[in-house]
Length: 161
Length: 190
Image (tube, rainbow over all chains, first blue to last red; front, side, top):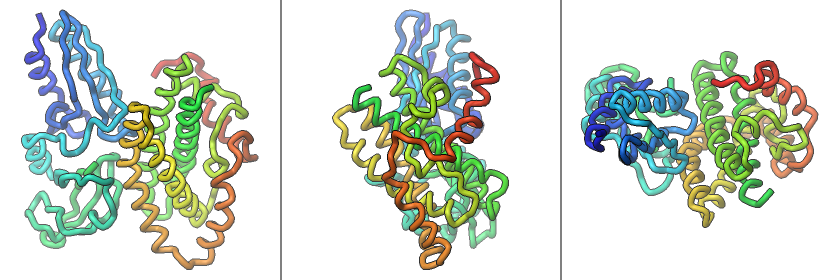
């Protein structure tokens, strides 16, 4: 018999395909788990709709559920069920240690340029907020590139979304 | 076809084509930063297209791939703006600026939809497009007053509200390229 707690625990072991320091549960993209007998329904929210890792995430969740003996049903959500605020405190700290600055909290409206140019972005290496925007876009849709004037290091910034 | 499917298809066709056109700069953009930016924007636009095609497909009893790649040219509902093959940077940036402006108005209207699935998709797209708009805004600021850029804007502006029922001359080659994998490997699963 598969329990909901066992599913959450197993999915917390599934690393994000592109940011393997955090699990998909820590990233907050597993929005719901429902267990009905041996059927396990999971609602997966993409970080960005254009995330190329989406299919890899879906397959990784399915295989984790199947190794528990459950029948996996992964639903990919198309609404705004995920935001960068959904990343857990543990997940944020793991990102920072890996050199990827965690996202700043999101506002009611969509993000604006003036925010990206403001001094709220902290360097994950030295903690300074003397950082500047280098490129809105980075190696994946969810990241930007910034430069720390204090320790003179470029770093990746998780986008607020 | 009902109004909901029509709106989703217009959105999906525009996002697929603009994403395809933007991806043409991958590897050859004027700077490395723009190479990264255009690749990322393109990937994201195609992600929006996929989500909108999937919702439309459920309504029309088909699949996202069939809608994206198996329709005849006359069945697409894309804006002529996104069909054009643009080979210089001034025009490419002008299209990004004009497209993001028009897309924003559309997404804002869809966010007000009483249909929660459509409104939810629009809210998600809006948050992502915010970064595309910032990119366009930075370029518009940098190039404002530049004669080549201003001329490109003037040339492309009439295409924004162009007829969605007819295809531009550039569409045929684009359609041929976009659908070549589907045609050479019918039924392939990815």
